[in-house]
Image 1: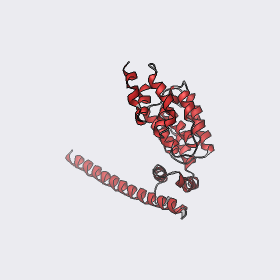
Image 2 (image 1 turned 30 degrees about the horizontal axis):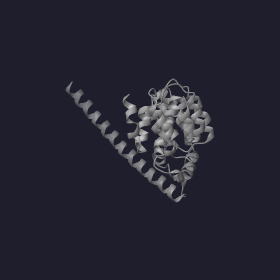
Image 3 (image 1 turned 60 degrees about the vertical axis):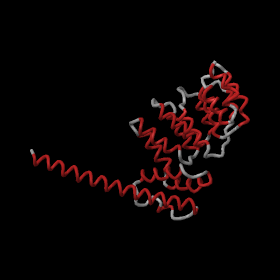
Length: 249
């Protein structure tokens, strides 16, 4: 019994050691890949075939997403070249379609939404909008926002369920990367909860002070579910004090 216990501990410790060594090697490979990606984007040239060398394919995809989250729109063209060369859009779409778990589908789409995507992907992800998992549906929507914010707003209007403030923050992060303008007034004027919520946080994020009159009318509305969000937006504009009495009626 004692011998068996000792043997088990030794084997377990060896496995732990191997796992840690593999983790260290994986982290080092990812660091090198990120450095190569950053250099490729900065120089807009280099050996693209070497970018994914020495690293597992899916780990490389995660590195590309890591870089995409930290660059501005000007860096998107060389990044788009990388995504196309390594067929990353197709890989993540296949991963989402073949997955048997909601978490894996949602993760694949979440990664996809952070990359420069093509119109074909926009069409392909629409099949996930009606997924049984709300998170899968949301990240499919986020992919559409990445390609066409105006199209995504139309899709959002027809979706069931309400966005959380965290969801809105993710949408605004995607919107802020692109050059496609999103008309804020139709969002504020809409009777759809999700569109109004997005509109309020949109004008706050981008400091659209021209929207103050409409935001103020939301604060004055005693039955508006979004009064608190509207009041916080006015506070960002420096005008909340004029409307504070409305919030305690």
